[in-house]
Length: 469
Ligand code: SAH
Image (cartoon, rainbow, N blue to C red; front, side, top):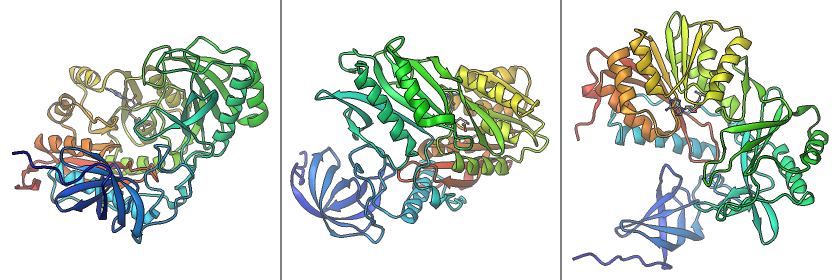
């Protein structure tokens, strides 16, 4: 007989938060029921209302904080909880970092099965808690006859106006206001994602922190917007010398994917240039670039420390605009970068030339396809750096890395510790040993945590590192 659920929707219960999940929800228990409570903190005593009852758990909304956790602080943002961005503005920075380190450790234990490994202290820059992002993409929407640009509410496609996001440089809000003014004054139509009508979809802004250059890209369901010179002149006036580029990105597909694959320059350059690890990098709109440049430098430093590239052939898989590989090129014998986005590879080739780095080769292909090709060429990298998107690496790629390349060390840079743990487990089954993991707080106030991880070839075999249970 199916057990009757104790908990009912709208029921009000008192609960103590004992844990936080890696997506940022507090966890409490009432009898045998698990309740997830967003925006709570460990040791909070709360009065919550049950808002959703699922098969094995429910979700609760805080009605009252009966006794606050010692980690709690007052949120400094008006739209915290509404905008879908930050999840940790209500707890102090030390507590955030402690949690993020635990997320990585837990995933390495539970998913990777590693019981005895070295998790280093989290790398973080407390002074970079805010205004750390160099990129933002604001969806634009009409709501009750008003033009709204901001961020989606959690799990929704309704845009919340967000004038001053604390994670972005303040000038981004001024640019958004200028675009809105242009949209209203020139009667530019705004995209409707249900009907697939209207022109302006997103305002995409990037800045290069070191040079101050700013790029504004209008993502449009169209070929151009009328009287665009009005906006160009306004941005010139607003941004002065820093206004480096105005472009359209054409996206006429009925899709949730923000960017289309064609950009058209309206003003200035096709790209902006930043300085990272003392080197200059050109970044085009379609190329990946780390959103928190200063902390990214610390990741690259750690990756270089783990890679020990001196005199080595380094394969930089998922290389974006070539940043990790080029930053190690002065020591390495050769760098081979692999990246699937054509524009990023073009940037990488340009970036190598610009920095007078000659010992590099870039391949535009899927990581697995390129690895197969390099294997057939008889190339044997000594060190492999992988920096995949959240879904991690394909098992077939990991097999080529471990079985065919048989390299001394693997440096895994990861933005998702669950897939990192899964992939490290596979690599250890294939003869590597997990040497060290360093978490990095690349995205303060969110639940995301980056990790840099070193695996070494293990002749003894990694078996006894796995949990028995
Ligand atoms: N290492 C770079 C980029 C990391 S982001 C940096 O630090 O800036 C991950 C990159 O992997 C993106 O540039 C993305 O375009 C690329 N990518 C995604 N899937 C890929 C695949 N299957 N093969 C190769 N590259 C891929």
